[in-house]
Image 1: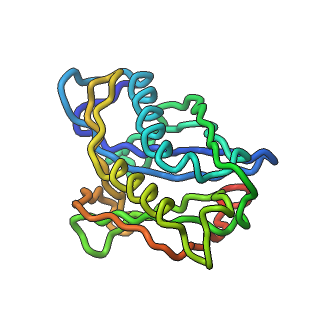
Image 2 (image 1 turned 90 degrees about the horizontal axis):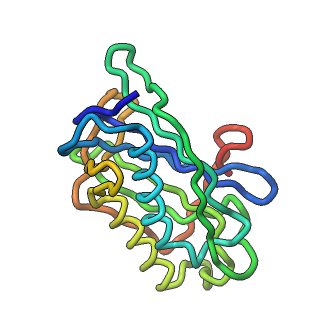
Length: 203
């Protein structure tokens, strides 16, 4: 299955705890550029590189008990109004934060705005160390790293394997449409709380 110019992708970053529980973050992007159609393996490889860049910003504040596990990519099928799996691959990524883990529901939250004020993206980043929380707030260093994560999420990513440009945005489930990101992302010094949505998925 090849990927053509202008396709909307769903990219899933799957992370696994030492006890086998899974945490997933889901991203959307439109792929454009020369050289299309692109090989699915090249798109998967580029997706891994994009995740490496984003999560590398927070690697030193997330405990080693969590690790990258898998990348899964889907493309939007406008005829059937669903997502067709492109493929999956291993995502080998090690977090390096030293010390004890905060309670699992405690996460850092990074938001991304789109061209539609009613449509925002939210990423809950789990498994932070106790060392980056002081008096109930994220430390200045932690906030700076979260903002770097947000910048890499917002900035179009050019894949080394495919040469395609991944332009991020948010998929609106209510409107069944891709909303392009605008130059506005943010985090907060106050920790967020991630509720469990599926058994063994998320926290």
